[in-house]
Length: 211
Image 1 (tube, one colour):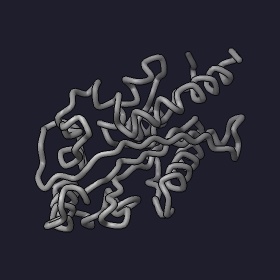
Image 2 (cartoon, one colour):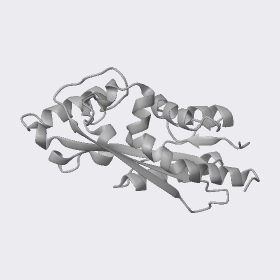
Image 3 (tube, one colour):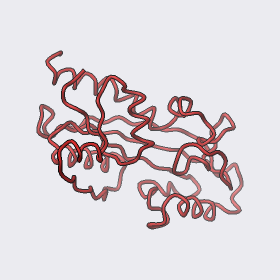
């Protein structure tokens, strides 16, 4: 559809796969792909904003500036009601630099003794499209999605990534127990991607002289 590739500002293979499945008509590069395409490193973005939208917009703009290409970025995380909305924007580093296993262990520990009725939570995602050197200029296109559920006291399932094995959906399965196509249909990121898809396709089509 377009000669200009879209850079998805992530090195996470799971996130990249979700976007490529949703947008098979586009050439989507990860950060690693973009570095190989350009022959140089792309600086890491410090996600220091206090909202998902702020982090996504900053990441998209900086990656677009660094690559000269349209860039899509997401910020997403888990909001647990019993923890006052934590870990929120700190979801990826909830337990410091310990990674997924440490994050999940900390979450289980912090909810120890809290009854099921009070373990409600949601995954939230915000997607941002920037094309800092193109027609968008300083404008950012945003879309969001959320998925309601509850936190278990132990993991179930082997799919997904992050907090997926602890996140129980109303259907009675965890996010990690869903086949990929079912996960994409209900997940926060899948909902955000479908919300931004028409805006993204329309913009890239315009770039290619089709609109």
